[in-house]
Length: 98
Image (tube, rainbow, N blue to C red):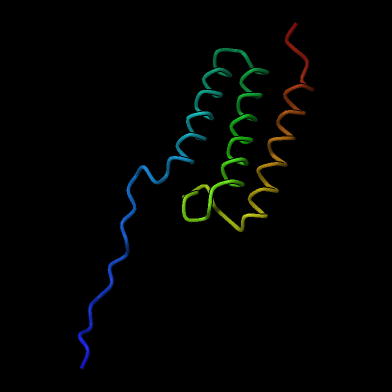
């Protein structure tokens, strides 16, 4: 009889999640700018973080994108693109404080 070995799942290192970490760093920086009373700039930075997430999801293969992949690639791209575009529109739409 053949020997039966249990297969252990391959452990991924924490740095395999670098796409998500880069996007979250951009989100944190954007929120810090908003907290410093620069709403428009912070909102545009937040939109830029979403555009970066869109680009990373578009160009990276499924095994390298990490936890940035939530659903199918098409759905993720539609959601990220729509949110980024809406955020840019809203950031530019809000009038500056008087």
